[in-house]
Image (cartoon, rainbow, N blue to C red; front, side, top):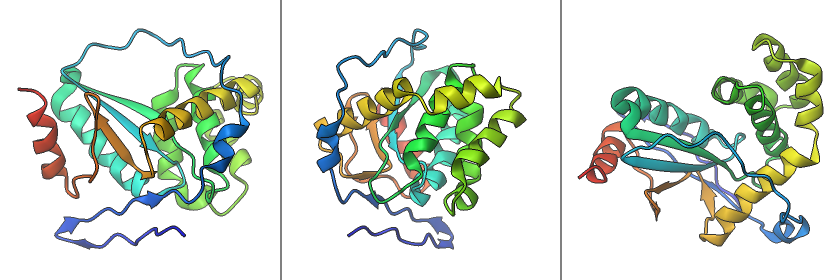
Length: 202
């Protein structure tokens, strides 16, 4: 019951969202013990939370927009990745756990980029092995990475992010929350996104 629409490049990029078809599994995980401690967030004028599914094509395309924002605005912008794996994407959760496992070794951004860049490949299967190869290319401790990727701790982090999304009524990915405001319709072009973000800098 999900629509993932092909993106047509005809002057403007139009992004469709990956729709969530099922939230029932949400209640199956005990999230009380999630350890959310992180390095202190960098202060910024605009904080963008991106609720994302690594196997969602719209999320992969929007990833480039957010990277461009960070290049254009530097420390005025902070983008926080929030995991929202959808039930219809069988490899989205292990992708999210892999990104969090890389974070433990200081390579979240690099792994995040690799996972999105390789989406078409690992979405066809053999995702775990591909993510381990990404870890090798980033010169991570592969044994630690593999153990962390498959750990209950990483799963709890991912599912805590997902629960946060459910609590704000999230139903599709990518969904942006800018300075606490959930954006109901994503800008379809980078200039539109830039204009929206600038409105929060006043």
